[in-house]
Image (cartoon, rainbow, N blue to C red; front, side, top):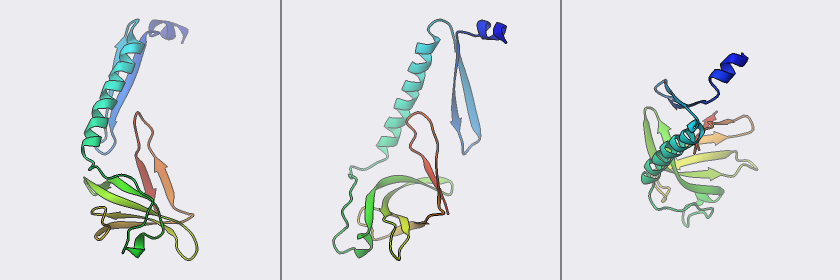
Length: 146
């Protein structure tokens, strides 16, 4: 209603959710500086999560080059570190996105490290594979459904 819009004109909300735990927190700010305060809170929380996430990675750059002596990396499109949700854990893996084409389908291969000798998981990718992403501040989360 017009009355509600006028009464809550300076109310600003933002939410933080933990999808896996089914938790959602809604925060409210009110007043003439609510917009600025909302942006400051969201930026501060995003910065803290970014610093935490970055602390989990080793200094290994992204690469497109296959490994010498490892022919299984010859169809590499892009490779680098990734956090993988595995059961109830999150683990750091070296992910190798393989090109789709010819007799081979594409694949996302995850290894223990950049040497690519111990495979953790292989996810085959074809035309029917569903890739989804979550949207949010500084969010780079995606899911693959076979």
